[in-house]
Length: 102
Image (cartoon, rainbow, N blue to C red; front, side, top):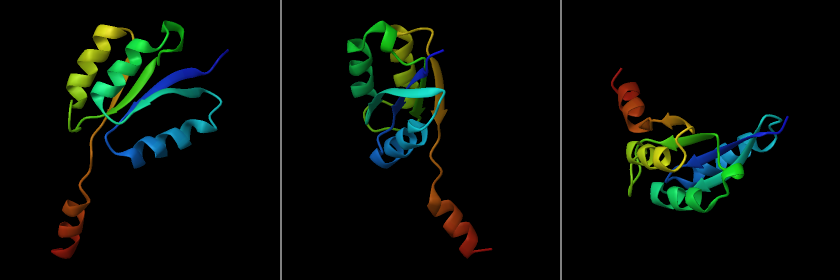
């Protein structure tokens, strides 16, 4: 059985690289498409052959050009059976402030 292709889209390059590196040694998953924006990801997805398209996409909810909800809607138009996992940013400032005032 082959590896399950996944896609990663986040406007933070550090997050994309962390996730790509995390899945690099996986026996189960293969990162097939990555992008730093929703628009870029959907363009890449359209040009990726159907058999290489990700079965699972991990996307950030908050991105500059196209948020995760819009990106999900576009992915659904291109590849309706794709599973979507959304990530929500946690703002470290909240935890820093909470810690300072506790």
